[in-house]
Structures are given as C-alpha cells and as structure tokens.
Image 1 (tube, rainbow, N blue to C red):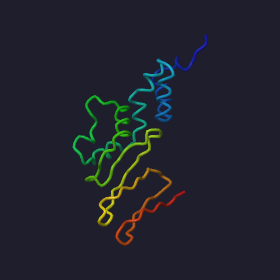
Image 2: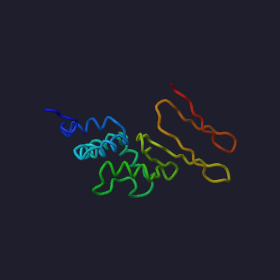
Image 3: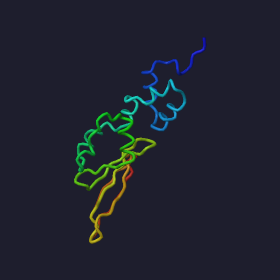
Image 4: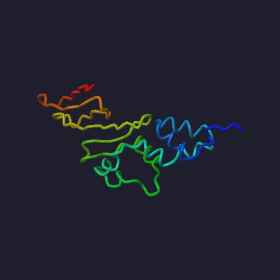
Length: 147
C-alpha cells in the first residue's frame, strides 16, 4: 500500500506547515483538499504572528484596532496586519507585518522642523540596530549592522 503526505495526521501536517512561511502555507493549502484544513489552522497562522503580538496590539492608539475581532482567526488577523497597519503610541509609530515572511514592520513618525512629520520605515531584524541622533533641526536615522 502506497501512502502519501495527505495520509499523515492533521496535527502533524499543521506542525510541518507552521515551520514554513506564510506563503508556503498558502501554497500547501492550495495543493490538496486534505492539506487545506491543516494549513489554514489557527495553530499554523498563530506561529506566523510575532510572539509579542498581543503586547504590541495593546499599545494601539485607535480604539478597536488592537483587538482581535470577534470570531477572527489567526489567519485573518495576520492578513489584517499585513494589509492595514495599526497606529501605536499615540500615532507616532505604526505596525504591520510583511506578508511573505511575517516580519514586523514599523513606521516611525519624526518631527522635521516646519515640514511636519516625516515617516521612516524599519523592518525588525536581529542583525541591525537603529538609532536616532539629533542633527541640527532634524533627526538622523542610523543603521548599524550587529553581525
């Protein structure tokens, strides 16, 4: 008797899918009906959300933006955070997720003289440190590689 990947238990398939990327999970779900339930599970999409997602969303500036909508799955929350950045810390920072990898993306609003706010995008990466230093009437964004 020949067995295939679809014959594995659903929780095993979900574990495998959770070790891939969001794009890979979508491709897996499109491959076979038997794989769709595992690839679309909350377990899989919860693994693509940042571990500190609840803490980040608790800092939302707009009421309701930071909460999970009633009945919202982890896949829907992931998609919403990719499509609709949420404002944090009084609107001085926005947060979203990068759709293909699930990486955190921040946009920082910095006061720039009389020109209002300028926005600078940052991606969360353990290999870079970002610092802001005053440079006359504006702030300078410095990126330092940490190895």
